[in-house]
Structure formats: structure tokens, C-alpha cells
Image 1: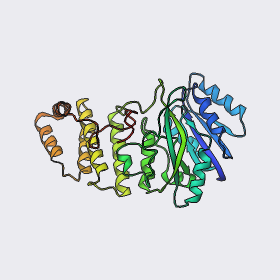
Image 2 (image 1 turned 60 degrees about the horizontal axis):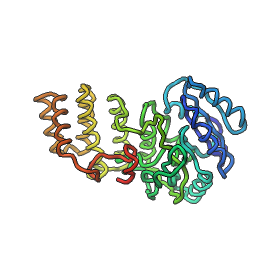
Image 3 (image 1 turned 30 degrees about the vertical axis):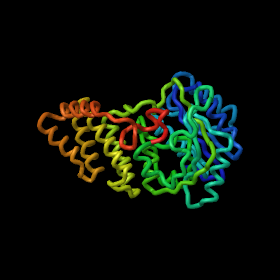
Image 4 (image 1 turned 90 degrees about the vertical axis):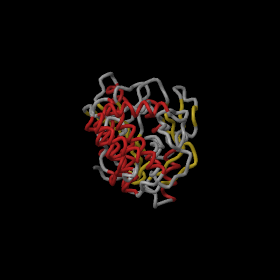
Length: 340
């Protein structure tokens, strides 16, 4: 890693085959009222001309933009390459289709200076459309002042990748980004949460999350292959445990139901090994006290895992309840439900 430059903000932007929005994202980082700022453009093996745009942007602003041309490995490894190259005291992650508001760094650095015990500063994020019309403000839970990432992370990834600003020292503690294809940012936040990091809140809008017709990772809930679901849910649970969340916490109970739903879904798809692992994890979430899970396990031994999942899913649909604190609707799954 490079020698740290005091007061410098390093903006890490991974991109792959997405040239339409990238100039706007870069400009939002260049337009910050705070300086100095450096931008690491991490091209993840683009093949549609985005790689040339990345090179052109770096040539236009050579003092501020560094282009990294990488083999295609996914957004996590691309961000990690940027993190390794970053020289700043502060780290900002930004996806190539989102926007930072001009005073973001000034506000959040001031909050971190005022609260040296905090390692992350965050503020309000707005959901906007392709024309930057505001759809939801604040988006997700970014209008709430929360002292730590957990237990809320068990219910939702309650901010966006661009919402927080990190001290570089914390990013070094968190370690490298995961190669999970989806939700690697949630897993990254969970490792920060496991450290019981204190958060500094800025009660002002700091970023825009763009809702558009292109592909985003968080547009639906069926985002992980079974093996990655096992990795993701296990990592989130272990991080919550490390942070001190107990089985009787409402958020842990919610998470246990979510993992149980995932176990049923992968069983229906025929991945019995993943289903067994996820059911065991759901049981651990409830401290092995759930009668429903005990009945499910016994039934699976009699009629098989796939048939048990089919019957259970049919029953769940039959007695389905509206959205509430004991259901599984996450804010990222439907932006109109941005409060739990």
C-alpha cells in the first residue's frame, strides 16, 4: 500500500461495461468542496468501450484520476485493487451509476474530526431517477442516527455503498473485499460492524442513489447462487455474533426467519447440501429453540428436503401476512418500503 496522505480522500469507483453514467459519478467526486481528492477508476475488464472512457478520463485529469485496468473478477476485487492503490486518509467507495453531493466530504470529515472515537461518518442518501428527480428522501434508514451498524444490518443493508466515508485505518482493519458476485458490500459492512465501529451522523443529504432501467445488484432478492448464499448468511451471522447481537434480539429473530426462507428456496432448487447448512444456521440464530424449525427438520427426514420445502412454501403463501416487523421485506427489495 502507498504512504497515507493526510486529509486526502481516495474515491474508489469500480466499473464494468457501464459508460453511460460513469462521467457523472466522476464529476460528482471532482466537484467536492473539500480538497484534496484522488479518484481510482477500477475498470473490471470492460469490453464495450468503457475501458477507453476510463483511460480518457484519467488523461483529462491526470493529477486527480488514476486508471486501473483489471481482469474481470467482479466489483469486490475491483474495489480491493482501488483500496490497495489509495493514498488517502479517508476512503470513499462509489458505484459508477451513483452521485456524491458537493459537500459530502466536507461534512463527513468535519464529523469525524469532531468525533475521533468514530471511524465512519454517514449522512442522508436520496433515491433519484435517471433525471435526478428525488423519489425517496431519506432512502433506506439513512435519515436515522444509529450508533453502530448492528443489529440493523441483520434486517437490511440500511445504507448504500456511497453513503459512508471511512477512515483509512478502519479499512485496513476490515481487510480485503470479498469476491462474492452480489452483496459483497453488505458483507464488507458486516465485518466493519463486527469491530463495533462507532458511527458519526450528518443530518444532511450527502449522496444520490440512482434508480434506473439498467442492471443493479439490488433490484431483487434472488441474487445469490446457493453456495454464495451460504457464504453470505454465515458471514453476516458471525459478524453479528462478534458485535454482541444475541438470539433474543428482534433483528436476530428476523434474520433467522430470512435464513430459513433461503434454506427452503435452495431445497426447492435441489441443492440439499446448501439447504442443510442454511437450516442449521437458522437453528443457531434461534439458539435451537424454534419449534417450527424442529418440525421442519423432522419432516424433511420423512418426506425429503425438496418436498418439505414445497409444502412449507405453499403453507407460507397460504397464511402470508402484510409487510411488518416480522416479515421479510427489505428496503432494497422494494424502494417504496424504505422503513421497516
